[in-house]
Image 1: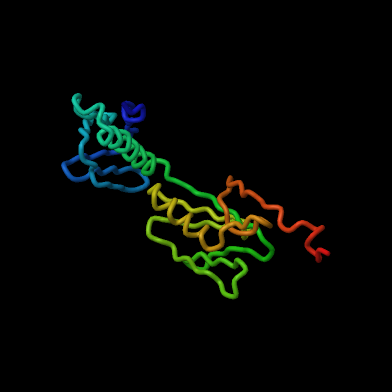
Image 2: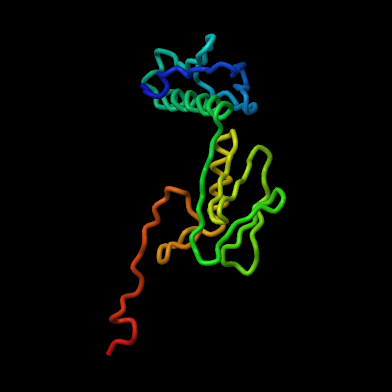
Length: 187
């Protein structure tokens, strides 16, 4: 049985959850999100919490259990998104690497012969601090993570000098490179 699925999702004040046959919609102070209702689970809604359950005879079935925890996590992510929002922080390491905002575009200078322009999507905001720290914010957890991953993919951190774009708390494993003794020409 899923330990995550057993927990009810608490609905804070100011948040409205609507569950129908096809969709789950959550409306809150920061906006509105919706997902397609996953199959095989039952969703019950009270005044201030949502519970997810599966039939008693299917509790040992692997597919039912996976949908059980997934559905609860998705609903919780929707509620957190419309109340608090999500944020991913990236940092740039490298000589001459910098970021700037030009209108609604994020412009990156990361060692290429050209600038890389990343347009700001609807519902996603960029913030640049000190020309090297980028913050991606929004209410949809999946989209915030995907946009941050796309920015990181422009210049992934390399293992020798650590240059590139990385997440704020990411640890880049470093390689030692060539050794000094045998590199100049062995006899």
